[in-house]
Length: 252
Image 1 (cartoon, rainbow, N blue to C red):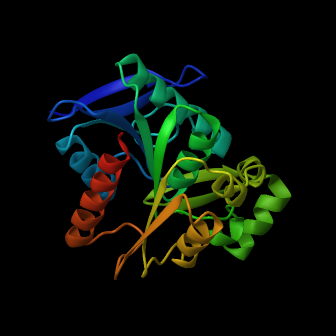
Image 2 (image 1 turned 180 degrees about the vertical axis):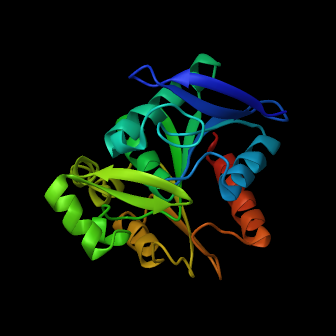
């Protein structure tokens, strides 16, 4: 049965999480991070976590600060802050006795999962869902006028998923300090990259780039007809089972 928990990030902000205890004897743990401006309750993340728990993983999906039910302001979001928050979630699972831990992330969460895996030696495997292989840019979701405001004022308001939010130049400067291609190239643990070939937000070419950067470590799975959120129930089932099966094969 799912359990709702709270834990602190390094700034003392409470982060909201949902714990999926393994339905069989635990074989490991997985921490899951959500997409940009989303929450831990997106359909694809819930399905993946449920499938993982079915086959013996303890799974924690959580809201990054400024999102969902977690404390903190979205305007303070940076990749570096979210990496530290994923690390805090990992520590929750370690405190629960996990000694084998994998990471999974969707969209921006995929970048955070990769960068966290590169930072923490104890991470055994990482899965990226609909993630970008290159850095984030304002041009991806801000209008030209919004980009000018960002340049002039150092911050700009935008609307996403019904929320009026503020994003800062510091967010993009911080993103530029992280090299996803270099992180993928230097990866020494297995990584699964899952992407829909009809992704309307991040093109599937980003998934092929990730694979080609480190083909010995990266396995690629392309979902035919899949969009960015894997919104069709059949696609969510396909992705959930594929991810769960892949993680199970990573446990020695």
